[in-house]
Length: 301
Image (tube, rainbow, N blue to C red; front, side, top):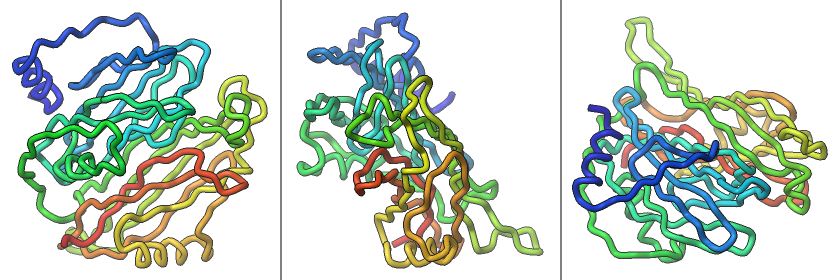
């Protein structure tokens, strides 16, 4: 039985859930925590699920915009997407890598619209997600919840490495979000390195390969005016130095119409575990336009 199928059965057994079918193209039908949100003038759906990825898990979240004429700005605390637009009749799907093998439903919070309205949105999360979700500074919908102890995968980068597809929407000019909307499609991942004896070695490399273009008929979008900036949650000085070394000593990289960002990870495979990191898309006046996860391994603590 797949992990997301198990949690669907568990949730249905524990409560009476009414799941309505939707004729919208922007639905998120797959998953274990599907909720439709019809709040004020906003109409959208959230869902999440967990998939196996080698010895790790992919925690995936999805937001679909039901409104036909309005782009939806969302920040789904912890789960993601973060500060990202979902155009009319589109979905935004965000994967996250984790070594926590004991997923659990977490009552999270999603902020939507330009004035910061929010509502509860449940997602499948890890023990670390549950802890972060309990931070009142980050979660305006804070509720109490029971915590489960995590079961963690053994340290080390998976033999096959790790990769995931990403698709994100954001404006090149935040003052004209509709007319300057961009679409970025890409692949994020970590490449595995092998020694002569066939065992994993180092260095490992994190990469983000992508194409960027104007979204549909939004003709004023300009990918050349956007920069990509790495953000490291832990040991930021160490990883920033590694990033600078591989990227001409530049913290920010011009997005452009296509490209690849690669840098070596300063980590030993015997102690490597997934850690938090992400890429921000930055405007010419240094405002954050959107965010995607960055696959990253650091030393177990």
